[in-house]
Amino acid sequence: MRILVVEDSSRLRQTVSVWLRRNGFAVDVSGDGEEGLWLAETNDYDAIVLDIMLPKLDGLELLQRLRKQGRQTHVLLLTARDTVPDRVRGLDLGADDYLVKPFALEELLARVKALCRRAYGSTDSRLALADLAVDTTARKVTRAGKPISLQPREYALLEYLARRQGHIVTRSEIEDHIYGGTVEPASNAVDSAICSLRQKLAEANSIPLIHTRRGLGYELAAE
Image 1 (cartoon, rainbow, N blue to C red):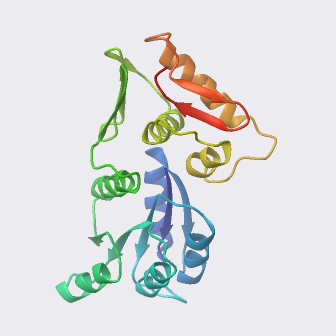
Image 2 (image 1 turned 180 degrees about the horizontal axis):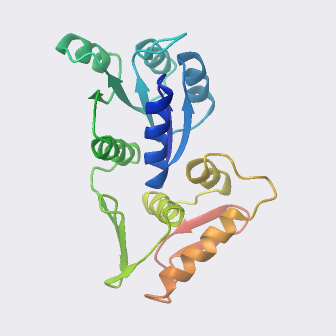
Image 3 (image 1 turned 60 degrees about the horizontal axis):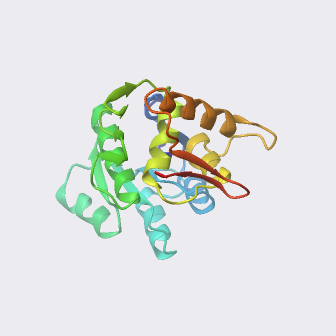
């Protein structure tokens, strides 16, 4: 999943981005509203973590502009304004959730995960296909009842494919949502990650679940 964090405090911005990356998210960051708006307009994010008090363009104005453009990316507002009118205004402008500073990183993570589930039309924290089960809250994977140990990037790839199961996912979509658009054109990072993930799933059951659709991409499906 790919997240945009727009926060003017460099210390908090770094803390939040490192925490999200450690939990398998691809993260882009910005320290001001104008750059944050540009990033939100030019990239496809699963969720945006947005501070209200920003230089150049405040978070509420940024949010309002995105919604006027018809962009429906789920937004979690970070605010030091712990008053009902401020929270209501943010929600009225199109925010999906808010978190009052200071906050626990565990709560931030839980709220971001919930927004990502909603981005894919689901409120269930468990994803399943055939004998494969993915618990997105505990970030645990089992197949045929056997636990499968995955590296953070491998887990992120599997969760993304599972949320899009039955649909072909292109290489560029994987690069954007899992690697944050940082993959070099000649890189085989996606192929390597797919190969590693296939091998680990096959250790529990040799019937393939990840299928290559030549010239198109990859699909997680039971066949």
